[in-house]
Length: 312
Ligand SMILES: Nc1ncnc2c1ncn2[C@@H]1O[C@H](COP(=O)(O)OP(=O)(O)OP(=O)(O)O)[C@@H](O)[C@H]1O
Image (cartoon, rainbow, N blue to C red; front, side, top):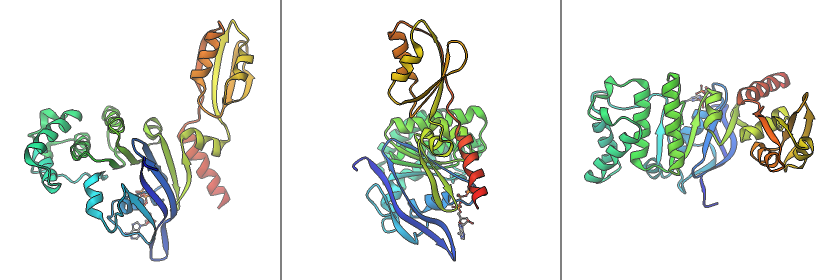
């Protein structure tokens, strides 16, 4: 598919007799935010390192923007932005000098680099500290500088390892906004995280790693369906129309159960809130409440690992 930027097939990494990554398959599309989740040691970082050509594969293949990271690591590094857990900038240099250094490595012409650096620093709200030494930067500022580097590179893929760990709520919010900005610019973003609510708020799809395998993959709704078998539940409160009848007609709706006077719990195979609101209002009804009861990623994750432990 033309829109696929990363494709892994049977990707495997063996350390001695231990299969750290065990024949995983996935593909990532342009402009998609894809979350890698799972407990410590599940294989997320090893998968990232294989995509970047920083560790060899033991089997299977991974294609990144048409290149093989093992054979063509420079082609991959040129096009892929990587924000590791500990961002490696030179502390004694200023932000501008650090980005100039990266630009030189990428052979970006000097004038072009200066323009790109200014634009990138503006986009991450660091324009006023361009000439400050990175040693004076907080963790949040370093992370934003990492995003600026990705923007400056015009990377088509961004790989972010625990990007919000150690950040306060406001810095986290700002960083997530910048990650959404990358998506808007058409960049495919892969991020690993333990902070499930944050992942849920930003990711289009997630892969749940367990013992080197991808146990579950899809949207949060799809995962909830697989693990909790719940569909996507919503609560509707409305009057002035045959609300139950209308709800049953909405495409994707599976069950409609009354929840007291003028209220219904609806379960559908997708988020049907927009369609429900439209139908009720068009039929002359008054919609007084439309609540999303979708299970959180945290609930899905907890239940999955409870069941996996029980089955072991
Ligand atoms: N260089 C190495 N040599 C031997 N074993 C390794 C090496 N790197 C990773 N491993 C093992 O591979 C497995 C997967 O590790 P990996 O770092 O990919 O997990 P992770 O999901 O990223 O965990 P975390 O959330 O803690 O970062 C673990 O069992 C780990 O001990």
